[in-house]
Structures are given as C-alpha cells and as structure tokens.
Image (cartoon, helix red, strand yellow):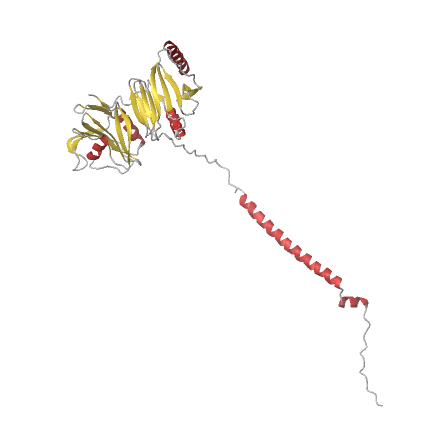
Length: 395
C-alpha cells in the first residue's frame, strides 16, 4: 500500500523567556501602562491650568497698580460750595430797633404796634398755624440775655402774686446759644420739640425775644417748620450802628400827587411818563416812573425798575386790578405773597421760575405797582433790595 508523503515542518528556533514577555505583555502591565498615561495627561492639564491662572493673576495685579507719575506739585482739592438755603428768601429790616432777619417766600409778615412785635406767619396746613415773632424790649441797664430773661421772669412772678394769677411756668429747658457772634439765651416752655421756644438777643439798650410757636404739638409739618425757624434764627443780625448807610448819598424821588418817596443810586437815570397808555391798548391809562441802571442784565439788556400809578382803581382787589392793568395775566405761573415794603404791606406777584416780579397795592383808591424783570445779576438784585427798602408813603 502506497503511503502519502507528509509536508516538511519548518524547524522553529527556541524562544527565550524575555522574548515571550515582550511579545505577550501581561494584563497587569497593561493596567500599569494605562495609569501612567492618565497621570501624564493629568499632569499636563494641571500644568496648563496653573500657567493660565498665573498669567491671569499677573494681568489683574498689573491692572490694580497705580501708574508711576513723575513727582510734581500736588493737585489742589477744589471745595464744592454749599448752597445757601436762604439765598432766595426775603429780608426784613427794622430800622427803629436796628436788626434784620430773613424769611421764606411763603411767609407773611405783619406788625403789631400795640404789642410792639413783628410776626412771621407760616402758611396754614389744615387748621393749624405756626409762626415766628420778634418782640422788642427796652434794656436800659444793658443786661445780658440770660440776666434780662431772669429779671423779667421774676417780675412776672411778683405781678402774678399781686393779682392772684397763676405763676408763670418754669422753663423746661434753657441754654446759651450763639447767633451772628452774639451770645443769646434760649428757653423752652413745652415738652414738645417745636411747640414753643424763645430766644433772647441783645445789643446796647435793645433786647429782642424771638419766639417760635406751633399751635399743634402733633403737627405733621412740625419738623419742616422747626427747620425753617432755626434757619430764620441763624440769619438774625443787629445792624452795625457805625456802618455807613449806603443809601445816604443816593437821590430821592418824591411824588406829591401820589404821596410817596423812594431813594435810588445817583448813577441811575429817572424817566417819568404821565397819562400814558400802559402795556396794551385795552389797559387803563396811568403814569410810569422808570429807574434805569447803568448795570446791564445777564442778557445784556438795559434794566428798568418801574413804578406804575393809576388814579382811579376799580373796587376789586389789588390782584384783580393787576390783571385789568395788564389786560390779562402777564405770567402763567405767578405766585402771590404778602410782604412789607418800607412802612406798608404789599402783595408780591412773581413768576415761580424767575422773570416778572411785582409789588402791588391799592391805597386811597389808587393802584400802585413796583415791578421789574429779574436781571439775574447779583449786584443788581442787591441794589433792588436796597431801593425797595427805602420806599415810603409820606402823606
């Protein structure tokens, strides 16, 4: 039987143990290699993260650094001026007792010759009234405010005992204060903060008692009224008796027909127009006195302070005559306020945002108006105030 030939086997070389390990790594070695790759990757990732953080930190640090500037003169600090809350207020001047005090536009000023006082009445809010009054006293002994108060208080107690009246209440609080470099004495006669307080101030043989009174101790406007009172009190000044009167060398314009006089600076020009038609063809005729200042307004215009007079006023109010006189209302947002000019009470009519300002009055059947357009120049405004303070009816 014939046998099939078998293929020859290729002889294989013996394989060493090291070669077997290289060709066939173990599972443990694979795990270790994988861990190594992961650790390398994490190292690279954290390295980049640290590098980015360092760069960002350097950037922020540089931003916060103050840049170097060469040494030189320090930049001066400019102080911001504090606005004067009383800048737009009126000024009351009492020549007889030699003092002045400022008051808000909305306050009405009245005088009481019997009690010898001046009252500054705040607008009514609801049914309550608050006011400030300045009462005048003679002080021939020249006592200081505290001594004057104590003497007056003791005399009041003796008078009450003689007439079997209740004694005057002891003040709940008293203190020494300073106003315009003057030492004053303030007493409070109520437990309420703004209910009633009186401040005594003196100069020479004159003593004034400035009292604030709020009818309602629970008045919701009490805080506002008290703030106004304190501001008014801070503006009180005794006039310097040795100070030269700036109006002493001024000219005086007198009108015998209408019975008034007013002073004006000697470099102003006066122009009188009689029996002229005023403002419009529909308005009543009257006369005008114009006082022209050499000082220009903020707009570069000539400034005129005018006094208008109408012989026959209507039987209506001063405000009604004002509208008739101007053939309508000369301003859209005019406000009114009672004020004192010289020795007479006037009604002030003024635009709320500046512009027309007028002082009107009916006296002995005649209509008077002192008016001007706000010049917007401080020097002019001060002169206008001085001029108006010299106005007097002389008949």
